Image (cartoon, rainbow, N blue to C red):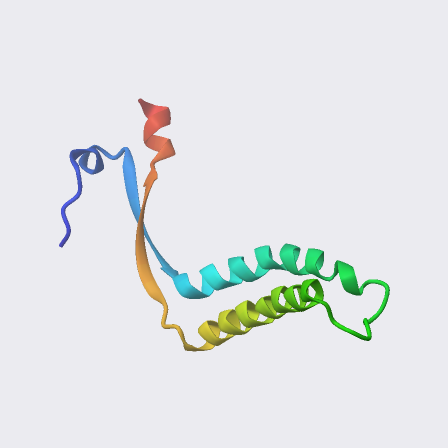
Length: 99
């Protein structure tokens, strides 16, 4: 069994075990944040699809494709990553009110 500091014995802190999937959570957050970048990168295509691509348009397409990659990796981890038990320390608010 793990030992905790003295403040756990007095009751001012509690330990909670939470089941999480950290890689799934990270890539989901990254995909959500990258959506802003992808929306900005779609600016050259708002007037229609160009006949000839310039360097800027290829760069914008690559930024948009990164959104697809991040979302795909997040979905892949959602199905394959095993849940992990994470211990978190939280203040016991009831103890603080009594003190």
